[in-house]
Image 1 (cartoon, rainbow over the protein chains, first blue to last red):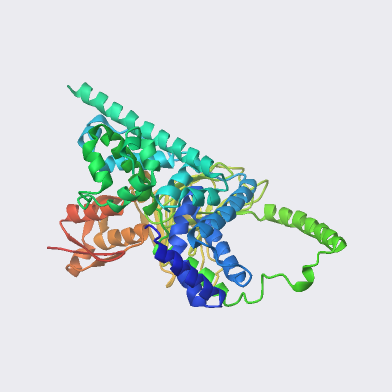
Image 2 (cartoon, each protein chain N blue to C red):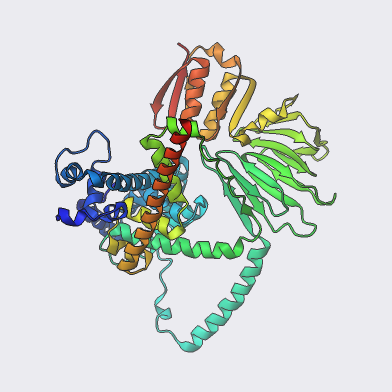
Length: 199
Length: 351
């Protein structure tokens, strides 16, 4: 999942081929990154149609502007930050347009039963629990978690994509991690409490 | 690397450390973890740090796993690729500003801005009038929506609902459905109707609860409560055809291609049971159950057993948001052999 150096060079080769007019190179870039970009988009909005429209806008503008635009140093961070700009703009527009129809919030999930907790306190359930907590983070904290741990961007790259200073990126990630850390210890505590009740 | 520095680390610090992160990612698969190297020996030498390291590792892996659960379905992916690539050929020369635009002449720009402003106001008004919302679910996902009039819609997996207009005043409330949904329509004044358009039929509603399932070949409507009228979308419109009036417990199925109409009395609750998370079947032929799973999960399910078993009637329930459990349920309850035969393809056969 990590983008090794070789892939960066590959990307640049593809980009330059695209600049020279190769539709095949363009299609390869698209196929290489669209799922990955879709995942990132999903941390900004759960609206799949919106993300897909954003991807279309992004790639078509790259193709149309291929002649005047220089090949970015690293293609993935460039794509991520462009998609981010497009999606945030579209989300803002939608917020103005979307007046009446609001999806109902999903009903609150019940806390797991004691016996279930004890039986299934495995790494898997711990991970699912953490995944839930990541989903529940404020948008920017969730975003940075994915940029760092899934897209594997460096701090300078994250700062670039999110349009903040490196130090701010570091602090934002710290805050997100502390929340998650807190969630795991709360859960351990509850788990122990449940054990105590059992005996 | 300086081990002394790491001794002061807490879980969050580990997670933020580049070399720790690399180590976790490289040893993502359990059992394959490297036995030596800096972090492996640090782990062994500092048992007091193990909990923090484990927590950091969990957070990193949870984030990665969470992301891999998000993806465009094969169908979405193909549609998007097609949408983009089909426009690549035709867009030659467009999108770049012509040369005469470049030396910005202030007077020209001001005039342009004025024109654009006027256009913008007009467009905004037009957009308000024709606003359209699309709600969609992907495979193995359901969703609950509130419509502008307070009516409630639950969308089953692999479905799309289009809602047009602001529904103010006397306008008809209209929605377009591809896939399956359960409607709870609130009653308005008697002259304001609620219409559900599908490929096969138009459902006209006053205030009521009902389930519509409209897939490629067939539309099926089941009425739970109230009263609805059904108009068939015939290929050749027949204006003198009387609409079908349905009462609770009625099921109407209409095939789009050969325009076959089937009307039956059913247990309506069973047909809309998916909205509670489990699709129930009551004496349904196995063929129908497998078909339904294909619809909900977007997979292909092949039957490689005895052909006669496909017509056997079965009473069971399958979850609508978890393919693995759904497959395991059919396998277990019916005692079949399950095999994965492709990326999104499975087969069942009897032993």
